[in-house]
Length: 263
Image (cartoon, rainbow, N blue to C red; front, side, top):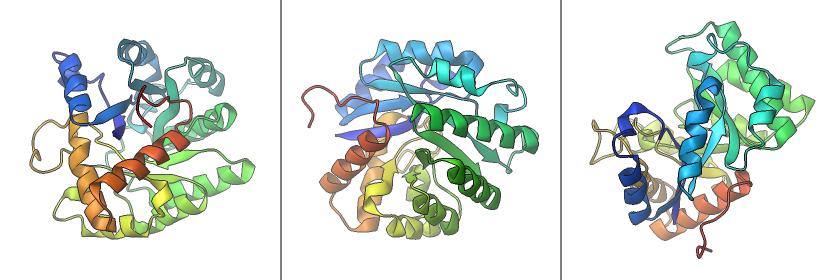
């Protein structure tokens, strides 16, 4: 069994064949998927997808790209929406200085709001970090000092220092198809230094498809390819990487339930 800990099944890329995509994932051994929220104001769409499939869960949160348009989202609102039994995480939230689609102050306020909701609910915060390593690390350290909260640095493509700081503060690190790209030697070097009990895999579908699908639309079934490269990178078998990333997932995303009949 494998888990796709981060995908976007609500995106238009999947609208015409969502059921087939979920079926292909299960056929590939991907028995659990988390479809990640990017806009709280569209949570009903995310929730409906999670409710429609037994092995699909969801998060609730505002992507940093949308922090400006959703600057009014409160901690209480996130906590209330997170009461839904299919919600297993808060986010994705964080900082993105590559595209800067929202004012950086709005991104930071949103990030801290989501941290507070994670701390209250005990649900892991899914963190988006792009070209903002120093500020992400500083906020994580400051906020952890106020009270610990579970989190994952998703689709990791930042510097090694941020990964190690995240682990030091109790977080997990999730690797996507970026890990498989030829020019990602530094990311693979980082993966080797992450404790094995803090590793996760994801697709971030519909983006970042691994070979042999690179350049095409990504989907949850392809997390198998990323997991195989992660296994090779850290020197374990495909079976071992499946077990350890699955166990890690259910430890972090503790509200999610394992599929019936799967140990």
